[in-house]
Amino acid sequence: LYKFIAPSIFGDPQTPAPDSMEQIVRQLENRLNAGDYAAAKTLLQEGLATDALDQRLLDMAERIKTGIQQQEDARAADKLVAEKLAGAREQLAAGEYETASTLIAEASQLGADQTQITAMEGEITLAREADTRHQQYTGLLGESRAALQDRQFDSAEQAAKEALLLKPESTEAKQLIMGIEESRVAANREQVLVAIESKISAGQYGGALTLIARAKQLGADQARITAMEQSLTRALEAVDEQQQYAALVDNSRDALENEDFDEAEQAAKEALLLKPEAAEAKQLLVDIEDSRVAASREEQLSLLQDIINHALDEGDIEKAQETFVLLNNENPAESIVSHFGTLISSRETELEKQNAFEKYFSLAK
Image 1 (cartoon, rainbow, N blue to C red):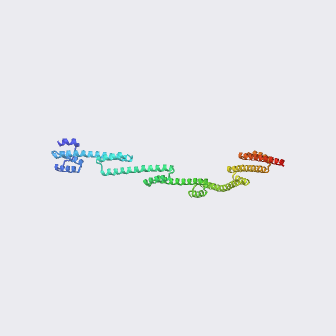
Image 2 (tube, rainbow, N blue to C red):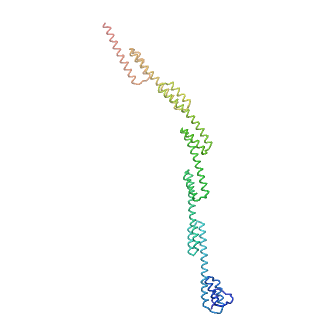
Image 3 (spheres, helix red, strand yellow):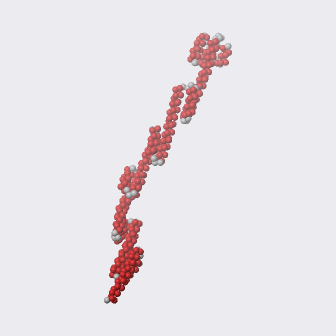
């Protein structure tokens, strides 16, 4: 029976005759206990080659068959575990952390070595953290560059320094920080140069001079600094000229107010020599001439009125009337015309009455 069964299970045995059945059984037991099913199979074939029937050999045949199947199952499981772990490592390298974690969990359920599982889970955790840091790093660099583009140097520098904290060896972050500082200095130089122009335009020449010194310290373009120094020099010269001009205009106005027309005209003309295009000085000359004409007219009107008054005092109605005509020709105020017209008429009536009285008085004598 064993000879019939054994070949169908284990193949056709080719073994030497055993020393004894007891020796074979003991050796089989040792091999089975050691899990050495291949050696046990060979010994079983030796035992089955004898003519003795022994139930122990049949039992051991079943144990060998089960053990070999378990070994094959274990090898299949080990192979599947290895495939799961290899797949997990590939997914980890590709950044597919969820998939990698799932494969590791499946490998663990299949009985993978826990130390290896723990190590790979640690790798995934580290990779996740590294990926998160990289994303933060990349985001901070982008934020820094955007702030730099908007000339927000402090914000740009802060973001770049935070990125460098995430990757202390990052050449990219270090270069960005250097670029930010260079841009800040360049912007400061430009701001100072613009401020110099503003100060000169506003007449704040002391402030402009201080800023020119600052621009030199910052290493601003020497050609622009020289141009601004020349502009400041011209402005200072213009200030002196402007001061002279202003003084002459003031003198002219004072003289005009005092009706010293010749002095006013002289000062205005000198101001115009300093600034030939000055509308103010030109208008001042026009005002002086108008005032001179007006004053002359007032003087003429006053003289005519004095003549009329004197003629009336002397009783020279004819002269008063002739002068009144001249006064009218000057287009004086209506009140003046009315006043002297009434005055002459009243004086004329008064003289006529006086002449009549004297005539009657003479006839009465």
